Image 1 (spheres, rainbow, N blue to C red):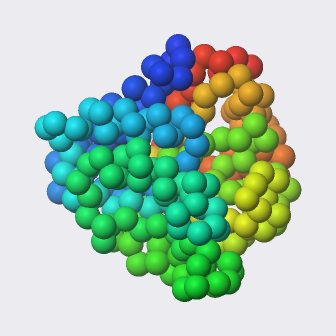
Image 2: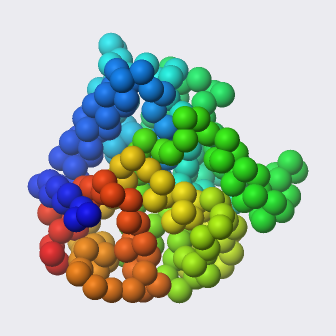
Length: 242
């Protein structure tokens, strides 16, 4: 299916609009009797969105945040208190600002004494994601790098071809830190909705390649996201090459 493309004037407008849409999505799932299952992402625009959600929900929350399951699309395999962690920034910007159930916050393993091996840590998260209820993610949030990568699935990397795993170890990342854990296309495409969150002219070429009629997933991994309901949330700069 052709993805939906929404272009906002700038990064601030993008963050505010996506924050409102995210709250509305969670409210809708809960109104239908479900417990929303959301895979979060990291990055500057994602952090701005989380801050906007926290600001909206500060006084009289419209979402029952205790009844939301939080997952991550990828994570940097560094100590839990590292500022490089996606879950740390999401925690500071959103999860610490609203009342969540810690048992429903499913962080990827950190590099610590309990998880000394990257591959074993990835396998552990693979097994955990497979236990989620009621099943598929309701929503996956993804950033897109200037090289077209999503989660920690980078151009030319062998993880792009993995179809029998939910989560994989990634070494030698072209952007530091080098060791990571990432969900695979198998997991990411099992989502009710996938939202790409992209801001800035430095991402414009990658956005254009991802949305082109033809192209290679190994060149532009974002093309590997084929979940039926996909929305590209862009600011005007990121949409500049469309």
